[in-house]
Image (cartoon, rainbow, N blue to C red; front, side, top):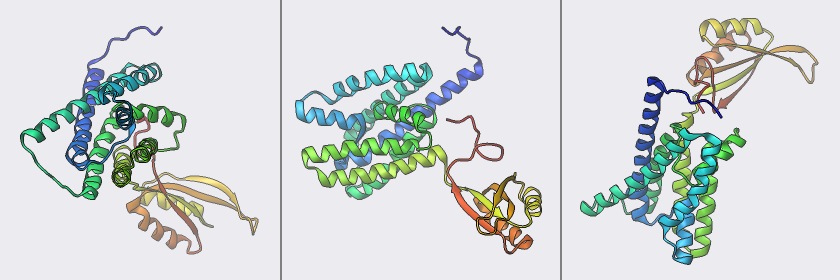
Length: 297
């Protein structure tokens, strides 16, 4: 048993800020669903989709099935991730449900038809609910259901983006829904919305791809290193290499730069060694000085 520690004012402030972010994200998720997807009969995935399938087959209320399926997931997640994650996830689940009901009441009181085009509803609904979910996940919460399963899988397979697990589980549920009830066209729109939503989640969690990993194979490694450090203010690592054909030993210059610096880097390397060989690739996540904080999950 760990001894109880008194929370500091800073910790309490951080906790309240996280809860506020979860509620803001839950509102975004509910808006995308209630104003775009629901009016156009675009089915949803996750626990809600599973509950809808069970409801159609057995008559068990959707709300009851959502609670029944979520209870064991919340218990397991509490043991695995702790009380803070449990509270944030409860806030996300309850907040999204409350906002859906509030927006539903608002629609009944003051009907507003944003679009009746299912493709537009899938695109814009996917963006809005995806951004909302991304904010919830960024605050270390979930909206329950398959989000929690995705959280487990993300910890097990950290090289795979969180949204990929969400997308896979949601698409699986929608495909099953389509096969059982023959709602193929609406399910296609749902998959479009889910794919766009997963991209929006990635954008919130990981940001746009704006970093590049560069390998420079050159006969002037020291000069390239000095140029990168002094003119681009970037750190450099030397990797030892040997030419497969020539057998020549060489130092390979490795660096990570911002996307806007790539043109300057090419010019610097060209001025130093026109025969240099460069490999430039996208970097999804970069942690450390000058980039993202390594403590983020």
